[in-house]
Picture (cartoon, rainbow, N blue to C red):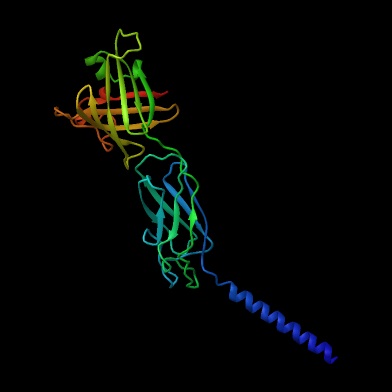
Length: 275
């Protein structure tokens, strides 16, 4: 009986010790589980291993001072963070203003070792890191385009007798635009415009701004807006030459048809199909 009693006492002690150990291990610091970027490249959903807070006192929402978000060189963006104290999910709102190749990923880390806490006040390690899936490709205007028939801006048809325009906006930010006038059935354009360009995505829908620094056939600057619409894919393009004119370019806020304050309506809107 004595040996049986000792065995039972030992077993009880082992069980008590085991349960105590498990209880101690439960108080682990929070970690990242995943980060997923939306197909429109506008939000990253970050999942944590448990409910998190910005303060060790079990309070506070995470914001952009608590999460450090980085991207590969060449991706220009700003961000802010939406989170409710005690939630295990945070949303990073991204505004990308540059071209995206479709291979880039975002990296998310705590801003420091005292930025994110769980309910027990344990801080997430500053070495924690999670990467998003790849961004969706968005090259803006880069590519080759054709405008003909009803897609040619009425302004070009009426005043410049234009029948067709081909445009090549290259990845090195140079461009060549060929203009074919009515009656020209050859492959030789009537006019060739070339130079360099700058683009930046605005915060208005999917509209980009563009500035063309024309070098040939004469030096000039033209600026305006464009948007690549899908289903089918059509480039809407509206610019105005500002060099030596009183033209006021269209703006993202004004939308298409806003050249010179909207006085031209859609007459200056050119449409292209990708080639």
